Amino acid sequence: MRLDFNVIAEEYRDNLFAAAFHICENAADADDVVQETLLKYHRSTKEFDNEEHLKAWLLRVTVNQAKNVRRSFWRHRIVPIEDYMETLCFDSPESETLFLEVMQLPEKYRIVIHLFYYEDYSVNEISQVLRISESNAKVRLSRARKMLKERLREEWSEDE
Image (tube, rainbow, N blue to C red; front, side, top):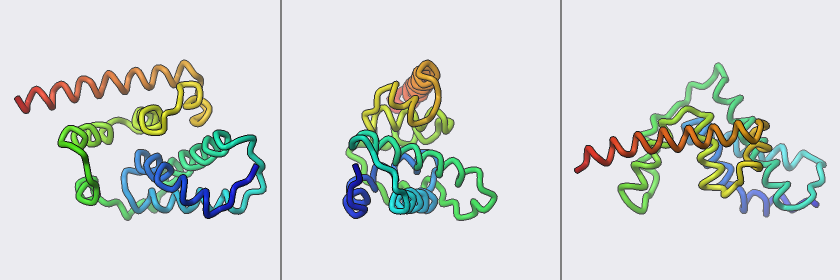
């Protein structure tokens, strides 16, 4: 199964950007990662079993590409998270606080939170996308939740 490139770009661009941003932590690099991922799809002759297989492949390529960018020596275009935050719209102050706290997590926890809560992936699917064991994915998700719970409890208790 292969879908038209324009359909793929339109349907998955935002999801791929969000996943890349959680790793790269800046919009310019995340945009580059999405473009590179879409180019890899365009150049690829790979046939996919179904749309879920395609989405998993796109996310895996995005995650790997974002990790490469993050490790890159040329990572000089970094835009502070505060500058990027000005371009985002949040439903509530709590949503903004949650986003900031998720972005403060170490990368390996940030990406599992993103895949689980924003992409609705199961633990098994996360393990396949990140190429880690299912138990490792569960542990990362559990630790990320615990860190967020502690940070948010502190944040929201200070507000009272």
